[in-house]
Length: 360
Image (cartoon, rainbow, N blue to C red):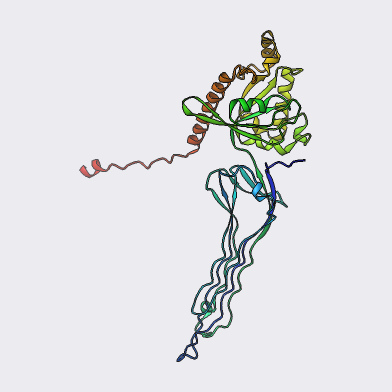
């Protein structure tokens, strides 16, 4: 069986570098047989960073790197020469990557921006040379500090796909076909459930050279929040989408029940997902008759925007693009308002006007 190149989970052992030891050297020259201490400090060990890189789409490049070790610092030398610092390690990860401790599941870092750099493990400090221990009572210190040991930790890196719109639906609801019509993406399409086993991203070209990103999330089934089917593996990708587009196929047995099951699974996994803006789409209208539209409307929520489409005949596709773009703009405005309201405006101190007092 061919393995997928979409890797969204890796477990890696990270180790920062050990600090170099300080030197206990003494100055010795031709006419200075008993010079004082001149041992230099050891260099610090290499740090371990993660860096956001938008050119990476998966964690595939880290799949076979089970151990990543930074260089140790070099020891100090005579003449108060400090040792060289260990070379830092920069692990490039796609945007949307989170890092957790593999043993405690403690959250360590999250990368969502291009070039964002997060220190995961600092290198050990270098030891001090014997010049630092010279005193009036100890003119010839013969000891220096050893370097600090580096840190070691097993971490788990998980990728949560970043997209503007997430397509949510049961297997074989037509999500991949819709993505191929909306964008230039070419996901695998077939007439059987679970054709999509990994998230697919597509850039949708909109009017006046605008665009937005749509993610085709692998199908959800009842019990997914408990790990059934593809389970929790792909539910996490829905968390990073700005808005959710629910696809209900026209040939479903009960359109309203299917929508309720999808919402229920999202609520079990993460109740905060229900705060996202939602758009309802009834797909595969080429398999239905126009007279059934009213019956579908009655069974689905009245407070959500609803579009009927057919990816085969392109019916309703432009209307869907307009709706998604409009909903995205509303969401962006709402986020901007929340950011503005969270910024605390400090009250200015009143300006004292003592002109009248001076005149008196």
